[in-house]
Image 1 (spheres, rainbow, N blue to C red):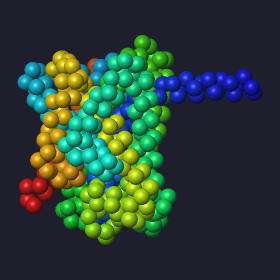
Image 2 (image 1 turned 135 degrees about the horizontal axis):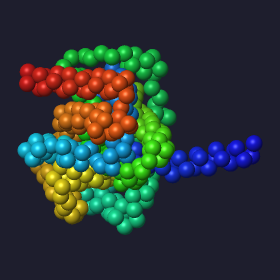
Image 3 (image 1 turned 135 degrees about the vertical axis):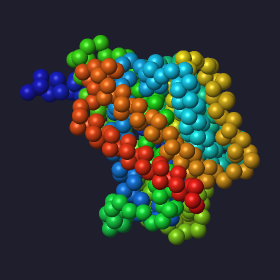
Image 4 (image 1 turned 120 degrees about the vertical axis):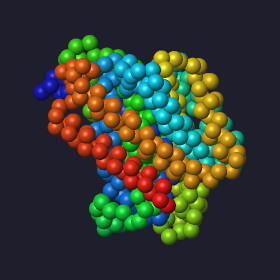
Amino acid sequence: MAVSTAGVRLAGRARALLLGPAFVAAIAYVDPGNVAANLTAGSRYGYLLLWVLVVANAMAVLVQYQSAKLGLVTGRSLPGVLGSRLGRRPRLAFWVQAELVAAATDIAEVVGGAIALQLLFGVPLPIGGLIVGAVSLGLLSTQNRFGQRRFELVVVSLLGVITLGFLAGLVVSPPDARGVLSGLVPRFDGSDSVLLAASMLGATVMPHAIYVHSALARDRHGRAPDAPSLARLLRATRWDVGVALVVAGLVNIGLLLLAASGLRGVSGTDTIEGAYDAIVAALGLGIGIAFAVGLLASGLASTSVGAYAGATIMEGLLHRRIPLVVRRVVTLIPAVLLLALGADPTGTLVISQVVLSFGIPFAVIPLVAYTRSREVMGDARTGPRLHAVLVTVVSLVVILNLTLLALLVTT
């Protein structure tokens, strides 16, 4: 019995050592754009849109696993597979939209971090944006200097700070059980709730996270050399994705529940700054500081992952690499300009998530097609039942995006 227990412990330890890439990708699911979208949803509509987060998180688990699987089986990122199979013009067009998605992501993350620095230390927003950009560059340097495992540990530590910071308020202001159950029933309340649901979807099923996860799995593990090794890596990856996305999902749900239970009906709580003031007034300064620290950790970690994603997109589709410092400066400029021009920070975050929602089909459709392809995946291709589920997910995303487009045109 002792030998058996030791064997189980060794197997568990070996599996734990394989975890990590999904936790880095999961940072994209708890970025400042999520904070803005979920707080806005909870403060405006209470528990109404809770079901959107539950559905979106389930979709994210399926999609992120497929992305990691593609990287492990092919030894290439999703943009790399696309870059090898598209002609020059389609490849360039795809790169342009992917870079626009990455830019929208970076705006959300830098703006969110700048808001946190202003809340905590009174730093002007443009200066805060520059600080977030500089610190994120330092975080990225840990990968170059110490390897991906160390980078993963830093990001996972920040995820822990994010989780504690955002969920601390629920201890003081727990949600209403009946409200939570009612929020699991799919429904909307006017066109604004549909627009907000699309924003929440864009913030939860993140296009750049789909691109980057395949690269993270590849860079951590490489291409599996044989079937037994691949089976072992895929089992570990299922755990990695499952645990990481459950944590991210709980954070997102917790933010909406916090707003629904403690901030609904309070003036100004559909902005992050207003929500912070309301949290301090209702739950105390300590909870408010915890929230702001969580927001800062979210901005710093997610902008680092966003820069990683942007480099993955460029390398895969253009077959080029530029110095990380150059890329960081270029992608930082739009966010800092918006802050300097006085754009509404929370409104900017929500709109950025709408832009992300339009980029989702361009990421998930090729992913679903390639993971079903025997030419690309060999015997590891997606089975017919799971493929049918994934096609359904993609169809729902496309329908929601078309609905959103119609609402934007008509309202």
